[in-house]
Length: 444
Image 1 (spheres, rainbow, N blue to C red):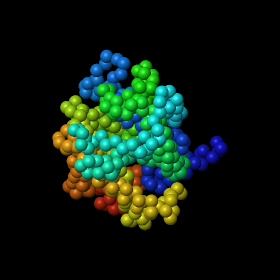
Image 2 (cartoon, one colour; image 1 turned 90 degrees about the vertical axis):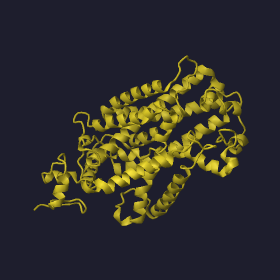
Image 3 (cartoon, rainbow, N blue to C red; image 1 turned 120 degrees about the horizontal axis):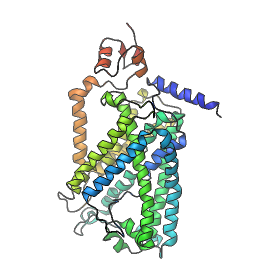
Image 4 (cartoon, one colour; image 1 turned 180 degrees about the vertical axis):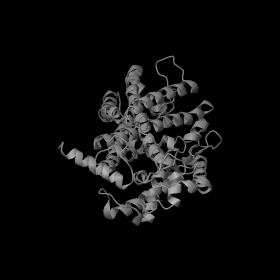
């Protein structure tokens, strides 16, 4: 088994070299670790506001919450800066927390609940909840409209599985491990997520007091009704530790994505850097932390401004997932399939995926609260429009003049092209030294 590791490592590096890149990052992760990153991000044990104070005199404010968020980002940035060796052990802990820990959470909730709701209540009760003044969209439009809008929460939860792809350069036998990591993370998170929802729904003690809780968080209210405040705080602590790991590995994934983009010239080459000691892209790690903090700053002004800034999260991710699928569907010959592929079913699955992403993109731009005003408006179309206008406009105005796509790093170095020098790659192309389009490096 040990003798096979160098062969796997060599094959991985050879495949990376075929794409034109050097092995700068530390390829030290197994398929389990690759799966664990996406799994930790997807399984958001609690995707609700953590600013609720229970059993203490602490009063959450926008400033305090932003300060705590900044401290968490700094701690996550420091941990990520030490490279994948440390992250590998935290990954193992995260997998246990999100599987064994959440399973124990669900069992404890079901076992301790004084009473349980019926299956009819859990599976057939319809609750609108979109009417600010009592008249919701189920009355103004239809129950189907409310159900369609309700898909947002589950669709948002199943995002982040692309982390397995972003970590592929640090995963052994990546051509198999990365796609399996994506599939396994989605499958396992769906199972655990469904288990969590069922345990909470069956354990609701009083539906009306839960949805109209003074705390403002139905899940927290369910836990208080079952365990009391001390028990609820203990279980919420478990949830917060899980969410911390989610943020930690989200930063890991984001930093690798930005590093790859910088390496290809999409970001300043200053960020195309891997620390020699820790073999981690430290500059993009802290860029990810800084941008995350900037995104939270609007919360100081108003929750509406913050919601407007973050409303693109789900649609933005799925559009980014859907575009390469659509391109592959239209021009299949331009894509070289790896050893892991769906064969004859690939085009069918791609078509279903593109149609579904198109459907949810429309649905998630529709209003979800009635009546619609400046405080309840769904700002997603505005956010998506601004990003789309910026992306398309910047491409036609200036980016197409200098962004050439994936850089043939190895060939460029062999030809003595300094990739750190602005315009060096474009000059080499113009002189015929390097043909990026056909991936052929030529000498005069």
